[in-house]
Image 1 (tube, rainbow, N blue to C red):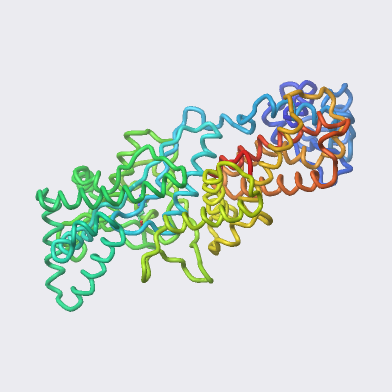
Image 2 (image 1 turned 30 degrees about the horizontal axis):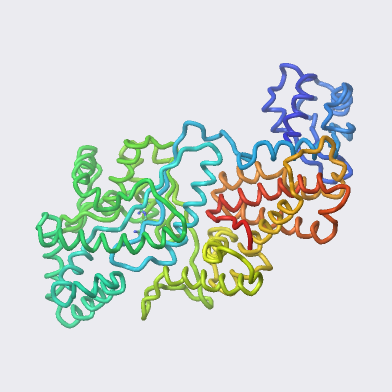
Length: 560
Ligand code: ARG
């Protein structure tokens, strides 16, 4: 409801040119205690300019008549405190939310600026891991939050599709692979071949040379090697696509590591020209400070490395997208790598490297141990998601046997539960994975928030809510807590962006859901003389819940 802006312009009209509107706004605080009002302006800085006491200034500033949003102004020891007029404040806010709909809470701070996201980025011929799931979910949500703050975003899935392991895989496939089996079950089959290669190479190390030979061939564009690599990539991407479809995630680019093959020479040349390369035991490195190891650019045999590709990719992205910021959503374990890459770019004279940020996150645990989709039997992430959907379906059928479109709702709830569970804790923390827990309809879960939104939808249909907005909000007092939570949404969005923390949104929609469910249990919404107002309030809550879920990458079922 912009009470801060209103209060600031009220003060500004009296302060004049000494302070700008923004300065005034940034000084406004929330009083520590409720009885001291809703907003407070400290007069200490002004007192210094005017060489008089803060109390005197506060007294003068509180003299003119208040805007209608406020009911009362008071001065307390050098502060001007104002009290919102709850009825008009609530009416103002609700009118605004219903008018702006899903645009409520949007900002323009990122207008005409681009953020490049490096997210998901699984490795071909290997299972899509829990780490990749976190990167996908956190990265997508963060991109949606950035868009809500006005930024343009570019989401890049930097597929791991290059490196010596593909020489080994080709060699393994030619020795033991069967086309049919790979076609039927690509990822588990290719993983098995790769594992077998390592087992056999332990016994017969000459296999490693064979693997290296095939990678060399691949790098030199040998047709047989290239054809197999293209095929492995295709079947892997098809398998990953199923996961992305379930999650409802899309990317703007799939330029992975291999895309930079023919672009690395230029980077190495630039490093040479800038006198940054050093020789160390035959390898080419760049020193990046005493506190961390040097960055490896070329191995003894002349092969390029992960860092060489990331350096090249960063320069390419800057040239292509002219990004304002670049975020790499990748697990903690790669912190050193990103620090090295960033420092090399700084040494190359690229000042923009300061706008590259590694956005790390914790592990997914099962029974306290790192959850792996690799160990033993390959459990695929797709299976995990399908299990979640099945469990959601069971829960829904039990709760609401008459529900239509069960399949679609089960997908929204099952997948939403997995995403919400990931995003409800600060991203740096480890997450314990438990399908039963995350699918509960009560407690701090995705289904709970979705269920709350669906419950509101039912009320709005039954009302029915005709979109009418009351001029005066007589129920402001009974619903004030919810109104002030609703009012926080724009700030919450901004904080989530600035702190790179989607959990700020999830915690917020949980809080709003709790408050609503409490309200729902304690007042009569339908068939009361306050129904119109209460439905208008419900409709605004519904808008914010739905938008909050959307920012996490979660859909809102109409019914549950
Ligand atoms: N493919 C890598 C992995 O699975 C992650 C890539 C992260 N992004 C990057 N630009 N290095 O570990």
